[in-house]
Image 1 (cartoon, one colour):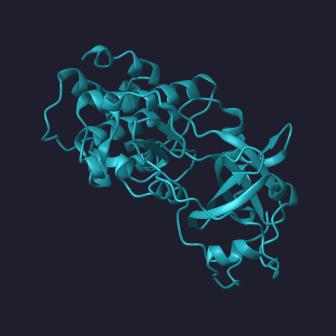
Image 2: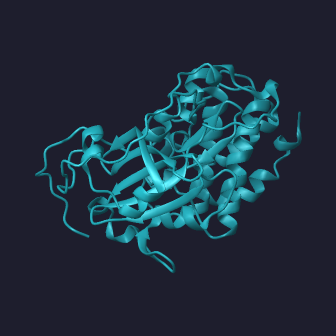
Image 3: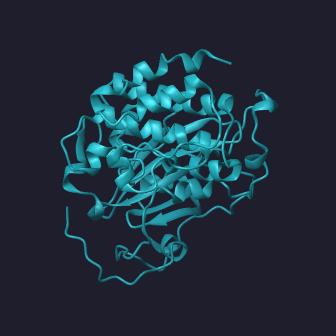
Amino acid sequence: MSKETNNNTAIPVSTYLSHYKFHPLFLSNYIIGEELGSGGYGFVVSARERRSGIERAVKFIFKNKIPAHSWVKDSQLGPIPMEIYILKNVAHQSVIQYIDSYQDDHFCYLVMELHGTQWSTNFDQSTRSPALSESSSFGSASSYCSILDSPIDEYPANIDSKSNDFFQPVIKRRTSCDLFECIERHNNFEEPTAKMIFKQIASCVAHLDSIGVCHRDIKDENIVIDDQFQVLIFFFLNLPFYFASPEILMGRPYKAEPAEVWSLGVLLYTILFGEVPFHHPSMTIAGHFVQPKIKVSDNCFSLISWMLNHSPDNRPTIHQVLLHPWFNQF
């Protein structure tokens, strides 16, 4: 990959999009819509399929920002980023769906489903979240913003004066956001709702484990949730300290699965109590989590304590997590 430079002047994404020469095959299949998010690795926009009219999310990833070790060879597409490879080869109801991908000299294009824009009429109103249902029309946009980690500071230079084909965005209510925002809006969740949310995530992680894939980045900002509490998981690698296990923070060799289960324990704690269990890396290394002020069942607390066991060897496997008695109560 080419060495990254910072010589180009920052340009607003909207201006940049209107003049960049996108891959002609991409433009023949999609009409670009609104910007959903931007960051140091690229930007995300909505796009409408020309044939079906279905709206998608398209992530444009700067090729010169992708580390050499993050490229893999796909039998159909050739060299592609690991993120695209995993989404292309993993099919699960709780993993964001891969739709399509393209490449040009500067970008890898990842076309994904856009969560929260289309609804089934068959759902239980009692499980619907008023806080999310009443959110702004562009509620889901911030979910895609969270997948890019810092402001864009450079753009490729092949910009001309010819504008691309854009559709006029139709403003519609999007009732999805990332799980972090969802928890902030609700403060915390009662056990039955927390269990419904967490079981989807744990089941997805178990499926990934069964096919030899470890996510390594389980956190609330990488999970999109809609107003029916249905979740979708993204694949990114930027684990913050409060989700990282003690062995990771101490720089010791670690096994991926116990570290993943630790992150799931942190996530379950956060869903139930509205805060992270460790406020500082020293607390994580010592293995002392904040004692919750909210009362939960004994089974629930035992599962959290098991997943947050300081010793990786004493944590459950993801499959043992799903067999825990907590999932059978209520």
